Length: 73
Image (cartoon, rainbow, N blue to C red; front, side, top):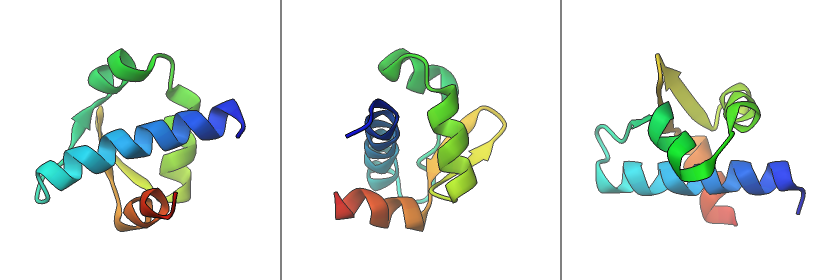
């Protein structure tokens, strides 16, 4: 698997756990994602563009499409 694909999947898994733990909120700060995963700007941008995550300021949340993509892995 390409390193960028691995980074995107790791982010989706983190956001999946956050949403699963708090279905009506599930937002994660960009700072927390960077702390856990390192440099992730490109991966976040692509996931937003694909509609697999949502961006609200500096917070991210997995979408239904992102949940399906994560569960398909």
